[in-house]
Length: 154
Image (tube, rainbow, N blue to C red; front, side, top):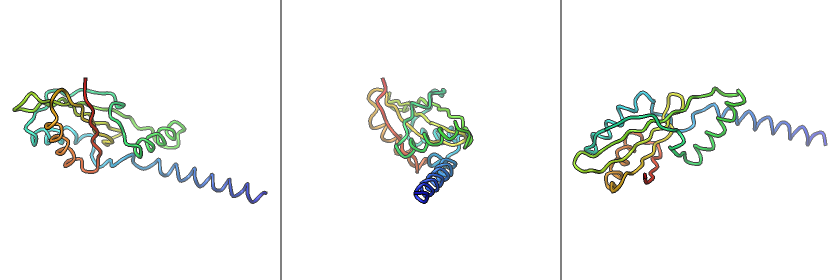
């Protein structure tokens, strides 16, 4: 009986240490720094014959995370609340983009945790289907390891 309890405690300790080490790493690709986002979005806009007409802060919750990223985000948040890993500030920005030749427009949300981009989201505005697809393709070129989600705006 003592061996079973000892084995269970050792297994629990290994799982806890492994979880903390897992939570210390990045949430997602994190290959793009927040300071580079403005330049990269301008590049995407230029490649899609569009312009950025506004930049504003946004709620980070608007940018959905895929399940693997969300689970890691939840784990890191829980360990940060316990003081086991460093707490990171999370912010988001929205770039309002309008295509030059048409009235097509979209909103590009960028979610940042600490210094790194963790999520991208496009919100369509009206009849801008082909423009959104083109913008998404260009985004994937400059943010190659990121998932770009899309939703219909109001």
